[in-house]
Length: 83
Image (tube, rainbow, N blue to C red; front, side, top):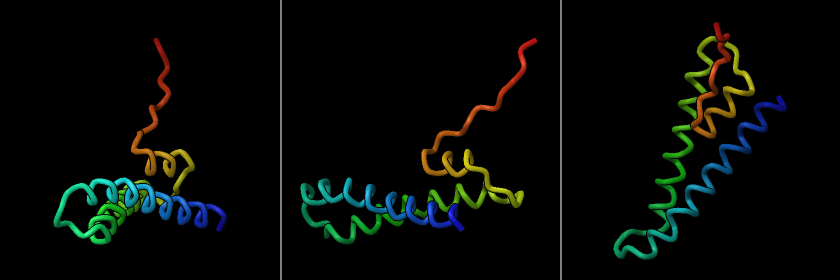
């Protein structure tokens, strides 16, 4: 349950961060309603994260590194043994 709450909080943060980033741009470019562009940016970012989480959980197990990778977009490198 703690993991689910953490994921929801991080998704909300992702929405806010991406919405705020677009508000400045929308206010500069005329003709685009700020609310509409902020909602589009926020929803788009959240859907991307949710898709990454879904892909990682196909095996039925979602690790903390997979969760972090879904939010950062950085895929962790697997450890390899050097010969």
